[in-house]
Length: 360
Ligand SMILES: Nc1nc2c(ncn2[C@@H]2O[C@H](COP(=O)(O)OP(=O)(O)OP(=O)(O)O)[C@@H](O)[C@H]2O)c(=O)[nH]1
Ligand SMILES: [Mg+2]
Image (cartoon, rainbow, N blue to C red; front, side, top):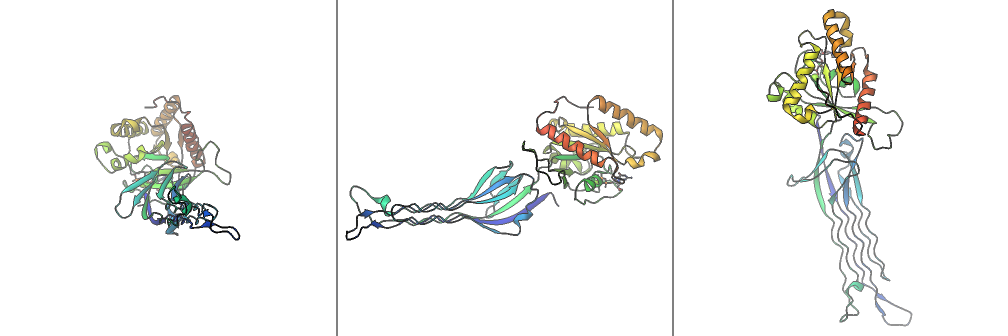
């Protein structure tokens, strides 16, 4: 199952630097006094969230991540160099577990979020540190301590941006395969898709992502198994996966308006929306677009279906709900669909979306 991507790594923080045992000296003079500096702190290992990264696979090639050791304290009260930290970039949605006991150390959800996974070792003290009223010339110093070291299990639960909700056979997986590099199974029978499929839709070609922090260079699309009437109370397969739709920013209802077995498109859409609403109020409130599939079948259907579809589209226009008609077979409308998804996503992320309830 592609939905969860996981890998194991070992992280090892740097050792703290030793303190120095030293006395100031001058030519022809006895020892003048202690001047041994402290060691430097060992470097720590951090995981840092990075936008636009959608897999843990880059971490598979390297298993050990080490931060640098702290430097040794010097004469003349010189403090040792602090060990450089090691930063490991991980995708958003990475759950970090301790491999030994399975305990969760944290979850990276935002870009730039930092999680310390191995703390650098403590510094050792030089003999100057131990000077006191009763001991003016201590010969005491301490060694730096070992840094933390542990094995981690990283698990990625990708946060999809757009979720496809549709009746079985509506063409969701085919659509995903046309919009991304994902290659889910496609067949002309219901419930072909048994677990969610994720695909990364590339939006950008070459230029830098926008400065406002929006991740518009790619959107993660989730194709979930088909929903049937009663999905919200456990019928079919879809209900297992409705929770994944809860984590998406935008829902895309996928409707085959020309299906001979599905209800009329308006009824099909209403049924899908009812299932989502029955599952959770939050899902019902989510912004959405409507994608009508299989446009290439238009000429094969009776005009009554076409009239119904036309009426539904007019109704969607009145409600200012974005909709589009596409064909995954001949590619009609796919470029516009891409633009539509990006535009809606950006509007949402900018908080400009009109919060009217767009229920039908
Ligand atoms: N003519 C035509 N057929 C399509 C189009 N898109 C999908 N199909 C066909 O419709 C059938 C179902 O497609 P899928 O992509 O498997 O549908 P799905 O919605 O993922 O189905 P489930 O996984 O069962 O819910 C397949 O036979 C596809 O080849 C299209 O644009 N035009
Ligand atoms: Mg499918």
